[in-house]
Amino acid sequence: MRDAVREATLAVLCEHGYQGLTVEAVAARSRVHKTTVYRRWKNADGLIADALGIAAAEPWPIPDTGTLAGDLRALARLVTAGFADPVEGPISRAFVLAAAQSDDAARSLHAFFARRHEQSAVIVRRAVERGEVPAGTDAVEVVRLAVAPLYYRLFITGEPIDEQAADRAAASAGAAARAGALTAAPASCPPPT
Amino acid sequence: MRDAVREATLAVLCEHGYQGLTVEAVAARSRVHKTTVYRRWKNADGLIADALGIAAAEPWPIPDTGTLAGDLRALARLVTAGFADPVEGPISRAFVLAAAQSDDAARSLHAFFARRHEQSAVIVRRAVERGEVPAGTDAVEVVRLAVAPLYYRLFITGEPIDEQAADRAAASAGAAARAGALTAAPASCPPPT
Image (cartoon, rainbow over all chains, first blue to last red):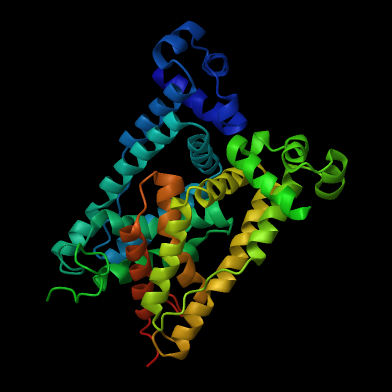
């Protein structure tokens, strides 16, 4: 039942946006009784929170290519491919737009990203262990940098994203990390040797 | 009259969002006759297009500190201070949210950012002339990188931004540019010497 409601939530959100995401619409689509949906998920924000909670808990294919450059490139390409996907792309966009319209949905989305950042940070921690980047490098910040230019293009400037944009974002994040710009120490200090 | 309508547009958009931005509301607020507003601006999207057009044409204090690092830091701090400003911040957010709800508003916002990117790119061109970054560095891409992490935090992950976040974003963009990660050539090639 939870799966049916979640799938209906994604479909309704995607087709009709946050405004159209009602308990009634999800009940009709999932064929779960309205009273049940209402009791368990309460409202649109409850439906979104659960759908994002499930998504955050799903296995996320953390790249392990052997180099930071390779891993960041794979990560940025994964994000790009996700937005290009005819099913996943519109759903991801719909979540970001819902977060712009509801504080509760925003909290759920932020928790989702915090989880994704934390899961992806292992890429950078491995690079620290291999000596590719300075000790003390802020792993989550490197992950943010590798994907931020893609979200900036998609949601702010409306510029297209493709593999080249992904590769550039990844290469930039890697170069900044290697140069020691992302350690806790001021960026002007040389990386520890 | 154009100024009055523009100020009313910003106030209404800010207080009531895209949904509340109507010719009637802007006419009432600006004390310009409804028929005049309707004839000249047509609808919410026309009002947004004009307000963003005026904003894009306004002088934008391009930093000129003498170094790329200093200029990018000043640029990122300018964006951060803008969002922290009690007047400018909510208006900037309102434009981004409007763009999420209207294709026409999105086109106006994208044109605004294209203009801002182009204006700011001089920072990087001067750095190329000074030999701070490789010839062939994509100037607009460096600008994007210096601000993208700030927009990513504000509009996607909901993480706070402050001077430290601005300085890190700027330092990362500068480091990536110096390392040659943002030239037209593949990122794995060494920068020209």
